[in-house]
Length: 224
Image 1: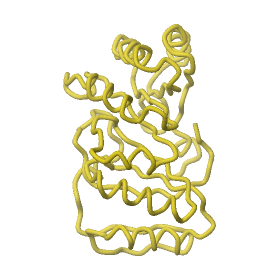
Image 2: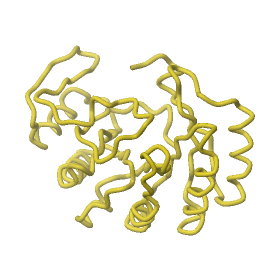
Image 3: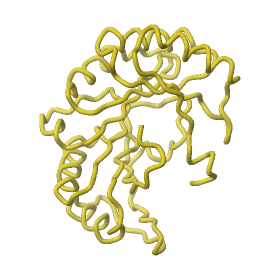
C-alpha cells in the first residue's frame, strides 16, 4: 500500500516460523552484532541494543526520513520492544509501519496505537510444513480492528487452493481488508505465469472488496 515511499528499515532478529520461501533466513536467530547501514556509511554495534539507542540511531542517522518500517524475523517475538519502539518513534514524528507474519497477537493493548500501519502475512499451510495458522491469523485481525492494516499472501502456482482458503477467511472476518497477492520469487523474477496471477486475482474479487497484485519493488530496482 505504501510502495515507493522512502523508509528506514529496523530489522528484528528471531522468528517463530520457518517459511519455505523465506528470503531472510539470517534474521531468524539473534546475533551478537547489528549493522547500521546508511548514506553516511556502515557501522557495527553490539547486541542486544536498548530501545532508546535504536531511537537515537534512527533520529540521528536519518534526520530527513519520515517513515520507519519494523520488520524481521518477526517483530512480535520481541513484542514489548516492538511496541516501545513504535511508540517512541511516533512521539518523534515518524510514521511507523509494522511488517509481521500475523501469528503472534501482542499482550499489550498499546500495540493498537504504536503503529500507523500494519502489514500482516497470511501463511499458507504448505509453506509451514502443513501447519494451519488460520485461527492465529483470525485472532490477529480481530485484535487490530480499527488500525490501518492490510494482508499479504505469498504463494506459487501450486498453492492456489490454499490462497482461496485464505481469501475466504479474510472475507468472513473483514471483507474490506486490503489484500495483496504476491507471487513467490525465484531469484529476481516471480515464479508464476502472469495469466495465473491475473486469474487468481479475478477470483479473489468475489471474496474481498480490495485485492491488489504486489511485486517486490526492491528486486525490480536491483536494491539490497
